[in-house]
Image (cartoon, rainbow, N blue to C red; front, side, top):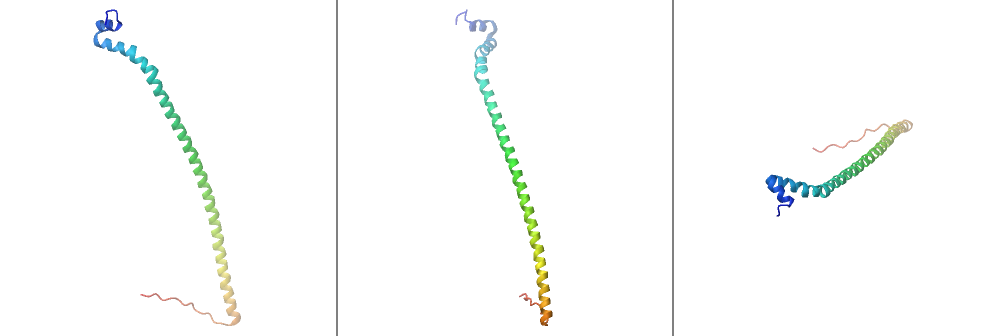
Amino acid sequence: MSVSDPLALVWQQYGFWGFLGYVAVREVWPFVRDRVWPARVRKAHQEQERLNRLEERQIVAIEEMGKSVHAMAQAITTNNERLSQLIAAQSVHGQETSNAIALMRERTGSPEKKRRTMKRSE
């Protein structure tokens, strides 16, 4: 290196640390500023966009699940109402059947029979 070379002058005047600082400012900083930093910023921006899209998809999915749960609740309510109607109709039918049997026995004069039950085998 010649004496007029800026690196040699920095080395002579400031020593190793001055030389290291000069190289960092003149060579490393422009590379970091122009190449590394924009790439990191771009990568962080892409990651943030990905997270935003993921959050939007999750929100849509939660809304759809809410709609599904609401539809299921309506279907269950409808089924419960139908089941209640069937139970009421079965009760009415059972009472009408008992009344018809009692009327038939009364008109025919047949005695009421006890139901046979099965004995449990022990």
